[in-house]
Amino acid sequence: MTLRLVRELVLQLVSATLVAALVALPLAVAWAATRTDVQATVGVTPTTFSLTTAGRSELRLGVAGTLYVPRSRGPFGVVATVQGPAADVGHGDLASYVTPNMLQLYTGLFHDPEPAVKEYVDLLVDALWRRLVAAELLMSAGGGLTLFALRLLVVGAGASVPGGRSRPRSVLVRRGSALLVALTASSTVAVVALLPVEPADGEDEAGGVYQLPSLAGTPAAGTTTNSPVVRLLLGGAVPKVESLIQRQEAGVRRYRAVALRDLRRQASAFSGPRAGEKAVLVQSDMHCNTTMITLQRQVARMLRARFGEAVPGLMAITGDLTTNGTAAEGQCIEDEAAIAGGAPVVAVTGNHESDTSVVQMKKSGMHVLTGTPVHAAGVSVLGAGDPQRSELFGATHLRGTETEADVGRRLYTEARKERPELLLVHEAYAAGAFLGVSDMRAFLDGRGDPTVRYADGVRNVPASAVLYGHWHRHVAPRVVWNSDGTWTLVMELDTSGGAIGSPTIGRFSTPWSRPMQEASFPVLFLDSSTGMVTGYQTYRFAVDGAVTVEPRVDVGDPSQH
Image 1 (cartoon, rainbow, N blue to C red):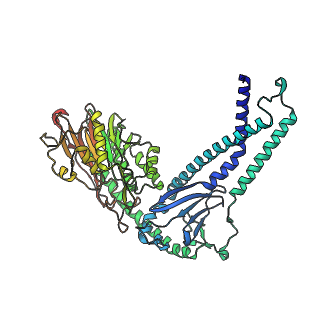
Image 2 (cartoon, one colour):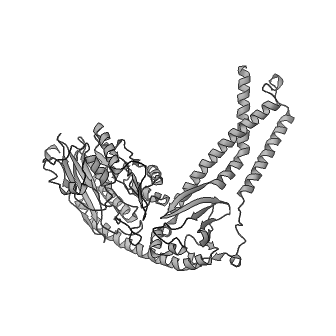
Image 3 (tube, rainbow, N blue to C red):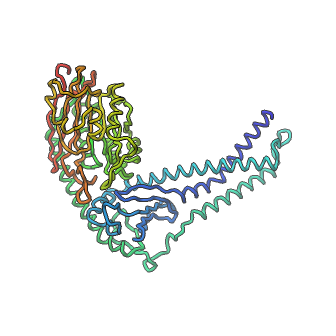
């Protein structure tokens, strides 16, 4: 076989594949559009998202009925098929959706629905593209090989135009016509496949579709339903939601006004890094609380305004950025990353984050720690996410086989290779395994003077600071004195979002309400040359918005500062 023949065969195969790709494209689009669906959680409700070409979107509540929402992109709309309230938060019937507690949980969709809806639509679009590319590649490859094989059988391997002359015009016309017919046929099949099964319009109230005047003036204005029960329930639920939102927003306004006033009054008490130090802003268990995200961002702005744009130089997060790890919480993750004002953000996941959360954290620019050191803003950081996953109001389970203790021991082994300045985990059990301590509460209660060295009976700790959260309580940290002259600050972090530590369906925090318990977060100060923690300052926010900017607490041997 000559090189010329090989080149001719390759060119024929490529041409056949390109033709197949062109003909297959409409079929691939139709297949992807009708087969794509995404499983996600809205609040605590398992929901399946898919596409429709009915020129509207739909919310399907099973036997309870369907809501028809006049929102689409051209003919394409989104279908959300709700599986029903989680078992722990309702009785599984339609009335479960409009209990006071469930209304409180879902009021965020009324506060600002666009970011939440966009996150779910983005999930569906990403899945659509993946299916479309997979289908197109498969059909292009299969169709191209088929066309190539048929040509070899019909024409032969060595067939070509004698003397290298151009092919007769009649041949080109026939082939072009065949391609046009094939493309028309595939497009027709695709259009038929995409036609909605149910008519998009032409239905009226007499035919079983009811108007929902209670939604007038909301983002869902114009929505109809085929269920008189849904119409009845929404007629009572919407005014309740509006009243709840008004109460929440009034409470948030009062809280923010008090907090901002106190921050301005205490601006002179803010501590910045001393000469040779760098500042690290720390956060834990924010749980998407929009009020505290705003206030922590305000503290960061005031620090930069007073001490320069490099303060804080880094932000560290020890998990539970979200409430339930749903796609709707992507906007709040972006807002939390923005607190740093462009400074690097390092974070571990908490027990409330999901795989979706990890994608969103990375998309926001965060360094998500998974057990290997990361160097950011001149600080070495090591950490790993919580091996457990907790559903809101639901059970907690291991994500894999690794336990909290396994995470702590794995990080200890890694830290002994290269001593990090910051060690981040979410739970005390992982921190205890890293420290070699069985009872973290007893360990913290055994604290001594943070600036006076003494024999503390704790093994040497290969990190300048060990930070964790999860328990939503304010407790003083402890300093471990290592035999090599270094020291380690061990700090349990309070909830930065003022979220209730053990939520129940009767009492829980939402991202849009004011903090339900005290919120706090520290700023750590590290020696730039040694990496040792030399001090910290804590900002505390009471449930009424009153702020206490605590004095800086020095840490470690003063002679080595």
